[in-house]
Image (cartoon, rainbow, N blue to C red; front, side, top):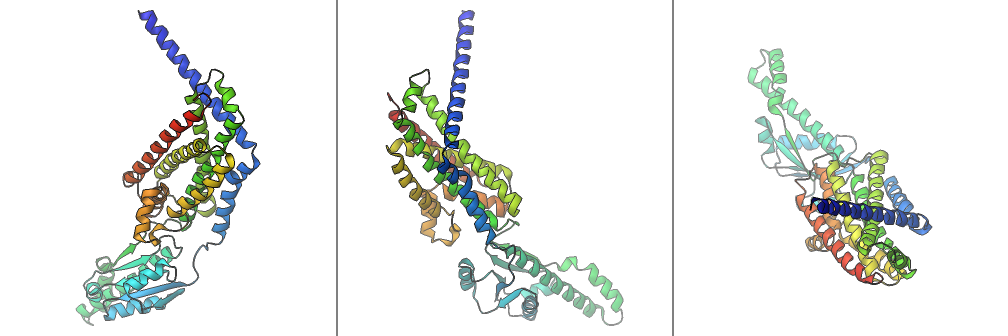
Length: 403
């Protein structure tokens, strides 16, 4: 009895080794076949990087003139002095004629770089030793950190002056030196808080471009690669392979893994290039690895699905490119999704996995979100990957010779 169980375990282990070897062989053969396709190599290894470099070359490292709106709800003397300090800051073009809603709209369409919101009671708060203002910025703008730094300096300088004045007034003119010393000691008590709306980290403005293009090309190139599965069926490659000791499921697994390897490898190179060339800070590496891995499964499933649905390679390419580009545009790969109407944002989250992937990338890059913060994004991407892979396997098995 024990000999029978041992023999059974040995046979099971042998089958697992054989299946693993089969899958590796299929992956290797498919990658070698793809490496001989010059057109496919252009779309996979050349076009994405050319576009990203071209776009990156048009994004300035920093803005020369920052168009800044000031929305003053206080109207006090200290608020006026703060506005004057901003107007005197080099590189700032200050406009105090905007209301909050108008300023938000102008920032979204790119006519303003930022807006400073001075709340009611600001002057009184500063005189009492505390106060806060808000800044509205586009997190993808290169001016965000410049505005934050300049405004921090202006507020800190004004707070220091007010503290000294307050201490001198309370001490009288009899002991000005002692009053000045007390004022310096009291600077920490008069610290003015600065709240940035729209970005809480120093994520590079190029993170959106690189992240969006990475997701776009992972998906579009995978859809185009689906034509390879059709070509293998038409040329009888699959039939000859399945005539030997190769299981159809192992064959599909190997083909799917090759698509996954291609998509994730390209994404990893794009992410690394963004860091090395443009200094992009992706935030959590675990988040980036998770997005690349899960979206790689989504892309592999979509590739196998489109290869199972169509009978002609040209039809798959003709369908895959426009659909892939449309989903990328809807999903926020080409422009920030928050610029879209609310209905379009909801549609993007329902109809595309791209919106969840890009949102996770930007959440990590700009807001320092981690895996726990972005669990919903990963859950949705996992659902998309599961649905596409299961559907692709069911349909593809039916298209195999003898299926």
